[in-house]
Length: 124
Image 1: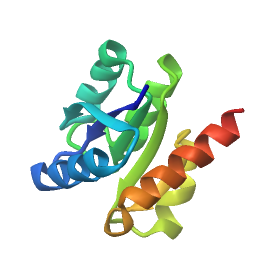
Image 2: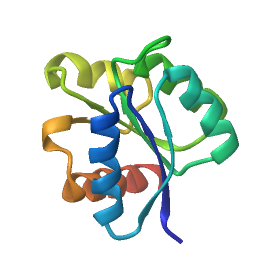
Image 3: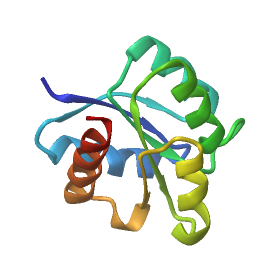
Image 4: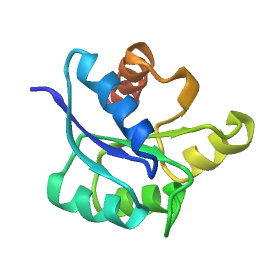
C-alpha cells in the first residue's frame, strides 16, 4: 500500500510542485490538497492521510498550529516545508510535533523518501 499524502499550502504553484514530487516518488500518492490550516485539520479527520506536507505560513491558523491540532487528534507524520530559515523554524516545527523541517528549495523525491523513512524508524 502506498503512503497517502495530504499537501497543505496556500500557493497553488507550490501545491502543484509538491504534487509532482509526490507523484514521481515510488510508494506515495496524493489524497488531497488544502489551502488553509483549518482545512488541513478538517481534511485530516476525513481523509486520514499517512503523511502531511505542511507549509508554515497559511491564512487563518498557521502551519505550526495546524500541525499541533492535527497531531492532537490524528496520527499522521507531518513534514513542515517552508522558505523560512531552518535555524529559526526547524526547532519550532519539531516543537509542534513535526517529524522534520525541509526547505522548499530542497524538497524532492529523495528528501521525501528520506524524511518518511526516518519518521518510520523513530516511530518503531
